Amino acid sequence: MNGAGTQENPYIIMNADDLYSMGTLGGSQVYFSINKDIDLNNTQYSEKFVPITLNCKKLIGNGHVIRNVNYSRLNENVSMFSVAGDDENNDITIEGLRIENIKLAGKNSFIFGNSSEGKISISLDKCVFIMNEMSFIASEPCSENDRRCVIHDKNITVSADYCTFVSDVYFHRIQPLFSGDTLSHCQLKFLISTYNLVSTSDKYNAPMSGVTISDSYFFVKINRRISSSIESMAFSSSDCTFSGCYMVCEVIAGVSSVLWNGKVGNICFFDKEVISKNVKSSSMRNDTTGYSYKVVGLTTEQCKDAVYLRSIGFNCMGADE
Image (cartoon, rainbow, N blue to C red; front, side, top):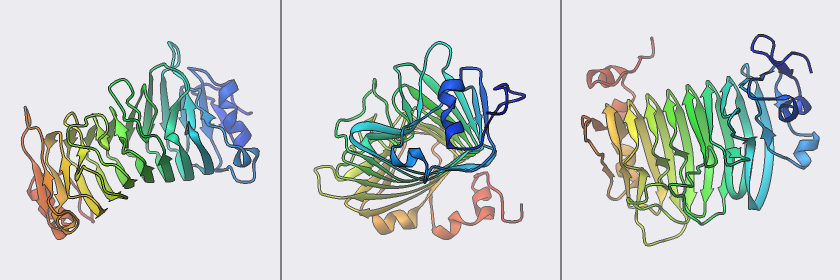
């Protein structure tokens, strides 16, 4: 493999075998750069996929894509990437990487799996994750000591800036999309299908659990596949903080109300026409201790009007800016 693994001269990844070499050539101060799109179809990894080991200081994607993963182990946890935390390697940066056409199905399914009990911080910058389908067979709930979510396994925290996350997610019992993470300038688009909802008091299993998120866009569809005793869904836990966020929440079936809990640091808004059309009794609420109450329900037309949004305090640009 070309390169020296330094910041000035990173190892150059050109194919699937190079990608997997991060497990052996990598280390806590090693840099890798992807210089070509990588298609895992028609490779040894398409027949028997194993998680890609992230053993590095930084992985530079250069806008290139890793595509075509189909990984199913219904009695095991599965992930696209595997990371390990210890005293030397617990801080990884991924920049400018695209992930496309990924299907994961397992007891729990993650983008980033933890192969150790160590704590790991992952910083994502200008990355795109198109996860076609992620299926969770597990029925046990998350807890304070097991804060797993769709994006990562327990003991991992993610900070994402200017990133896009898209997936159809299938739960036996609903679990978080993000947990304990920090998101800014991100786009989130999820179709959530679940057999069981999460109640308003279930702090660690709301789709957004303990997340700090700013200047970001949500588009979420919710489908409850069978009836249960819970009629309403808490989209976020009370320890979330939202600033400058736009939320479109559409219910396909089986949910009577959607609750948005958390603190609001700067004006946020939602499309009330979508909410009212699909939810019998909607409630967007927050804990305003130390914060201003600035959650605004707008019409679809108002949501698209940059001039109007600026007039109510939302920081956005017009089409000509």
